[in-house]
Amino acid sequence: MPSVTDTLIIGIDPGKVTGVAKHFTDSKNISHHKFEDKMALYEFVLSAITRTHELRMGVVLAVERYTMGNTTRSAQPDALEIIGVMRWFAHHEGANFMLQGAADASKVGSRLNLIRAGWWVPGDPDQHRNKASAQVAYALMRRYPHLWLTLIGSDKSDS
Image (cartoon, rainbow, N blue to C red; front, top):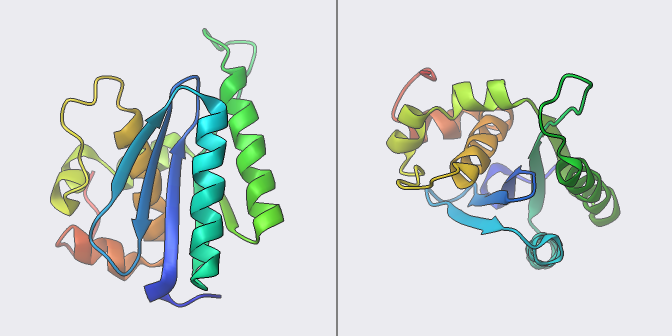
């Protein structure tokens, strides 16, 4: 497994409009992106994985779980497709794939914690970029908790 200092975590909030957040574990910064074009999303993520592997760094794809059931008000087949493509990218490119619940991610990556980390995107009307940041936060907390807790300046995660 790559060391802490050489891992890229890509958080994805999948859907018709998809939020993406990228964070290198050796940095405090995060970059935010939003895609309505699935092919542009796929090219962006695959390019990030490829470039990161060329630098001999590990990659984690942290994707929000989406379940389409009979009680779902608005079906999101785009979300299911994106999850499948991200899973395939991870398998094919040797990245780690983490399918994570929205509730768990929003607890660790709460508005307050994202603000503390400097990751909150103010004025993000549909919150896709902030939800993607929450996925990164949760993946970081699961894999490298000391890094997340340092980023938010705490010894425990607040909701």
